[in-house]
Length: 477
Image 1 (tube, rainbow, N blue to C red):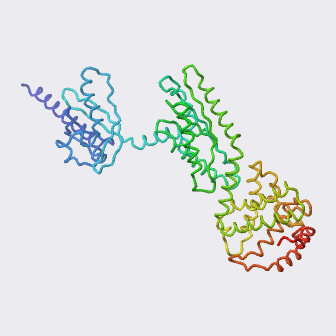
Image 2 (tube, one colour):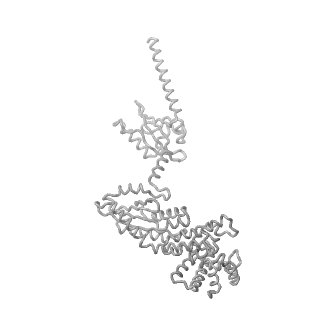
Image 3 (spheres, one colour):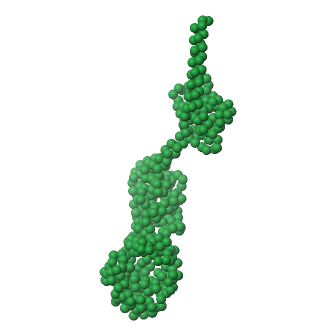
């Protein structure tokens, strides 16, 4: 062999060794986790990034472990299937999402890519950690289909599911439309945070009383829709009754949740699903109207109960004010309608205090200017509350103005004299008398005589002078 031929062979070997070293360096130093395995999934070589990704060392992995030791078994089966099909189909995908398990037991999601090495039964497998990307994707999908406030499905998903469930194998398909009866009143009384809490409570009640296969969605505001596949009208009505019972039994907050409900059922393929939804919606509105009086009464009682729970003394105060006010009203020869409204006013004149913070309400020391301003807001809050109820509209202005003064120095609007409603003028006198003659934890009570002297002192300034004279000279005590 000539020396030149030997030189060529030597150069080839040198080039091959150089190429091998380059590839090994690339394999070792690449920022992607990589390994080499044979077709029975035994690992022969790993790089540093793979060690970092799965927590096992090179010594633990090479020649001793297989893919199934850190890749979920179901995903290893995909790889085995790839090897079999690759022999018959060059176009088969070589990218898979797999679940990997770190040595410490931490589960991650990785994008796995297989590249066959020519002329041997080995493959280079790369793994890219996509856990955070998958979490972000799942979060985006979740947010796209769910309501932020309640965690229920949103209207977009609800509409999508109407299309998917509107088929013969899902019949009978019942649709329930639900709407809160109390959200506006809660927002007016306690603010929008409390209103949001009511929506969450209603969402929980709807979810708790439906089945796993049912779709419960919040449309927006205080409206909800429920899809009940393979559910007859009779069974849907049973679900509605369970929801009503749960509302009545709920006793963990300021107001008992109240929901108007309507249901309709699609039983035939050719029935228009939109017409079924409209029927359910109309039945919900009928339910709201039909039960408005009883719902209003329940809400009023619920509000009174909440007010009484804020202060154990207020119950006695309300009862005494009501008794005295009715006696005084009769002494003034008020009509039966006026007496009825006076009784309601005595019960509810301070209902706006539900919107005052517990800290201010129960403070024993003198209130600051800011705290006094907040306390004074109870007149306006009470006004907004009672305007939600038809039965209470006649006393709305009296609630708003029951802290006005005869001389115009009261609040909230500085009305004076007979600009102040008659019932408000009456209740302010009775309220004052009851307050100063009642034993309280932070103030000694006045005698009856002392209280009348105080009223005499303030007539023409705080109080209507004519009404004060009639109160003092009445035989109601």
